[in-house]
Image 1 (cartoon, helix red, strand yellow):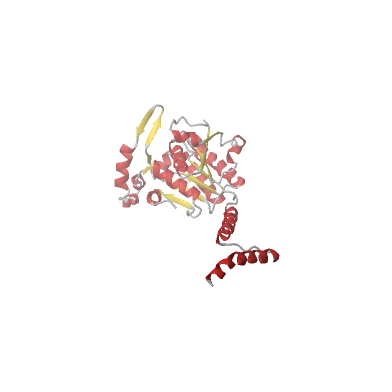
Image 2: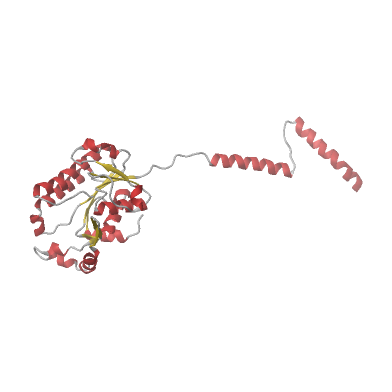
Length: 288
């Protein structure tokens, strides 16, 4: 009986092969099934590797990006993987650090929209660090008119978010630097009008850090850091009449840059005014 079964196996195999060919179907052995599964696997893999357009890249434009605060904002944004551009009257920064080579440097004048309109192409958010001191008329023009022009142009171009680095109130100092503060507040009003949901105003006090002046580095943190440690825990002193605002704690420039970039790129960051205590609080939180 065993011999009969043994000799009948080739005939059985040939019979199944003939039957399958007549029915137009393919019956395979285990090895053939593996080959078929491999083919199907290849097809699945091919379907899964279809080219999909990458997500849109966030492009940040920093107004005054070659200044003290602006350069730190550019550096912070680059560490977050953003495409970063800067606009200033002088164009490219004199900073020799390697990160500066990754910034797109534009030269333009905020008082002439045509001179920097190309810099707005593809921009999704803007951080303005533009400001200056001088006569009252000059301070209003730089801190007010220039930023108002930028806010209007950004709104008309469809830029989603706009962050303005303004300044904390210092009580009696506001009257001495009237043009400076009137310009700042005029810009804030314009921003909240044009960007009720995507506008953020940062109001830091004295901003410290290593500031480069010509070929010299000024370590402002020697004074600013100890003052911050003392004054941030003495919030009650700000309520002292007239001189209270003078006790506003200083803030590190890296903290301002960190919060500014976060506010410009995080769609759930609350709009409105962020005072120095808010800046300190947000800077200590982990980025979303």
